[in-house]
Image (cartoon, rainbow, N blue to C red; front, side, top):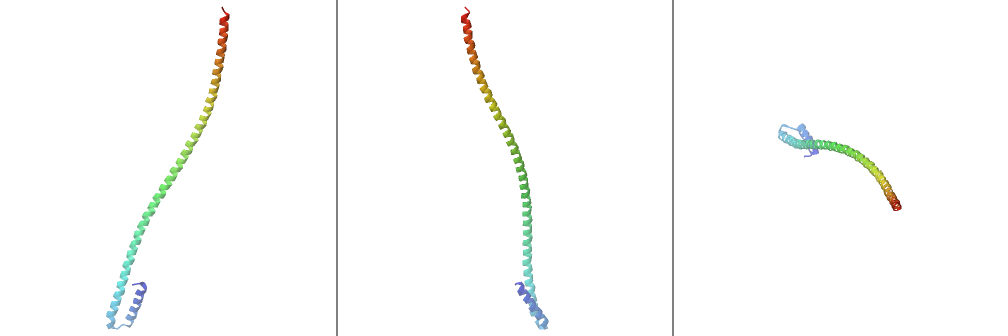
Length: 142
């Protein structure tokens, strides 16, 4: 029975009560019982709805708690990510510095290698000249 139907039944019941005689009491009591039964059914439906609302409230509370945990986890991940980015930047700076030093040492080694080759060639040339001089002085001494 809908709310409109219940309201109509109550209005009719009031009309009967106001116009009633003693012999109409059976009809009146049946109508009142029908109204009370309808109201009881509607109250039961309302109670079921309230129970469902309580269940939804518990579910929403659980979801809110999970979201809070997820937000904290995301925050922690962001902090760790930021730390890792800083560490990677530091490592990159160290790598760049080592790379620059390595380039400097390569250039120095190439320079030293070139000078060593020049010195070796110069030494061989001087040794050759000394041999020639030595041979000249050896053959001139008899």
